[in-house]
Amino acid sequence: MKLNKKKYLSVAILSVVTGHTFAGGLERSPQQIDALFERGTYADIGYTYISPDVQGTDLSGNHVSDLASDYQSMNYAVKTDLTPSLRLAVIYDEPYGAKVKFSGNNDFIATNLPADDAQTRVEVRSKNVTTLLGYNLNKNFMVYGGPAIQELKGDVHLRGKTYGVNSGYNDSLDDIAFGWVAGASYAKPELGILASLTYRSEIEHKTTMTEDVPLGDLFGIDYSHNNKGTLTTPESVNLNLQTGLNSTTALFAKVRWVPWGDFVYAPPALAQVTKTAVGKSIPLLNYHDDSTAVEIGIGKKVTPMLALSVSGLYDTGAGNPAPTLGPVEGYWGVGLAAKYNFNQNVAFSLGGRYMWFGDATGELASGKAVGEFQDNNGYVVGMKLSYRSK
Image: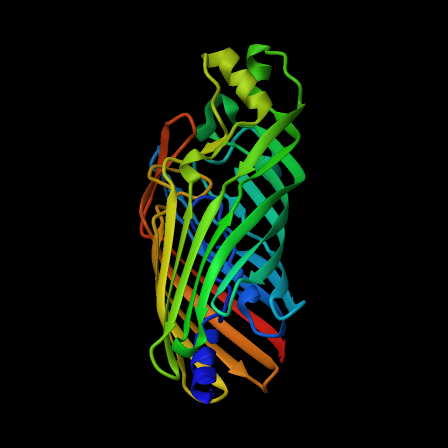
């Protein structure tokens, strides 16, 4: 039994830092549910700092300086065993986000507006609380599921020559909606094996959207500035695999798939006005492809108190050309993390990732290319404080 315990611990060290990143679509978190698989009563609190550097040139050849602002997020989790066969976990994260602001002298800056309103800028924030019940069918298999509640806020201001007659467009929304999560896992601690497959549903936000559409004002098209509209965050599938190589070393792999190619955000006033003016509705945001993210790594318990992990990362992105909201085509990256156990109950984790973004052509939802963005990169730093009571 002592050997089994060591192998189980070698698997547990792999959950070092929540994998926040600058991923496909609007993703900022892979929505992992690692806390559900912890032993006993467990709680953690985490902080992540994301710093992407995305630059390029606009259609006129002007330099576009770093448009992707630094981004911070928090995550929390608590888990407890209700009975020997039933466990409960509550997990908070911030899965979707964007913080974009153009500056300098380029086609994303308006020349006919006050300086404090001349920049194209976008901010999207989300908060997600997932409640999971896990039931052990036997000593190896568990099924789990539960509801997810999501708050989504968005604020968009399009400015400059890039957007033509839509320069001056504004859009904002704020809504709370519900989805669900379901999955199954297989564990064999004596071999250091843990595998899980998790499905997360799409979440449909039906809410009032506030819009200003200069195209409608220009052509005298009557439209309402406040309308009910829909924005649906996509479904996803996460596959996690890990196995012990020996009593102190383990191998892990994580795969996440999100159908961003099906995502379309068409605020109602913009859709109405563009259909009237040009004969077809043009959305504010869409993507060309689904995204798949892969992380493969190895964890090593170097002392009874200290564990390290290193990993390689790949994200396909959501297609090229890409929206000006995030004009990159996925990334390659490396990750390094450490976890220090102060005692049997309290541990601190620190990790980082460095990413090389794929080159992309910036594109409007109409299909018009508006810039080239190349040789960009970014980094992520995360930390987590965790508590476990046996």
